[in-house]
Image (cartoon, rainbow, N blue to C red):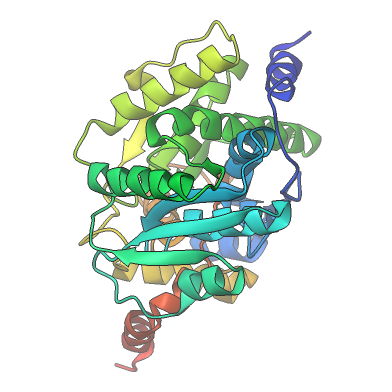
Length: 346
């Protein structure tokens, strides 16, 4: 058994529910690549995972929601930002599985307008509270106390511990890299690099699979936010916890992880001019939509690296599209202003 089939067999032993449309397509971005003057860019369409506009968290939830189903939960309590893709996809997974969903949505810097992901939470039937606790330990404490409240009301509540959930979620992106590797092999392509917007479980899962499969190319994690901890150390720890769950004799060191925080800009969820150029360029050359919080910033990183001459025109790059399209609507004013400035005649 080779490394790829062995890793896949280990993943298949874990409890899982079917939620996503898999495998997602791997498409060549011909016109986009031409606009950059090469190299050849391919896109892994994880915005096409299905389930309420798709995204990477649908892969995560195939493993996470399996526990809720196994425990017979009738309510899932979870939380993140008010425009969270994670919460939207969790609400969608709950709807698919017939489980109620209650969300704690951190107000943060966003106005809690019923738009974007928050509108979709409404449509999907999730109940929610807009709370002042910031994302992090304070919000996690609020989630824990809210779950306890519902248990006292007689509900069978399932609520993840954010620390333990990351390792299970990461495994879904080890599976994604298996999928992508097979697709690349069928196209007879060996990429020079893979790009993704991640600073957590998604990137950790890719790092684990890359090490296990001994892939020669780097995975560049473009950060959407600056966390107050060592991001490489964090991803390494998550990857190694995932390896334990899979009984996999592999260890990923921080030095084996590529992280770039150069494209965050003023902060999380705040569009940058480079991000808006990436959103506009991909939309107008390929008809594919990026978002201003995650994928737009990751693609800005890829474009910058190409323009800096890191790659030749004959090489191939893979960009993993992790979804997030609803954020376009939640950021409409900033986007319209930036797009208007870009198109203003000189």
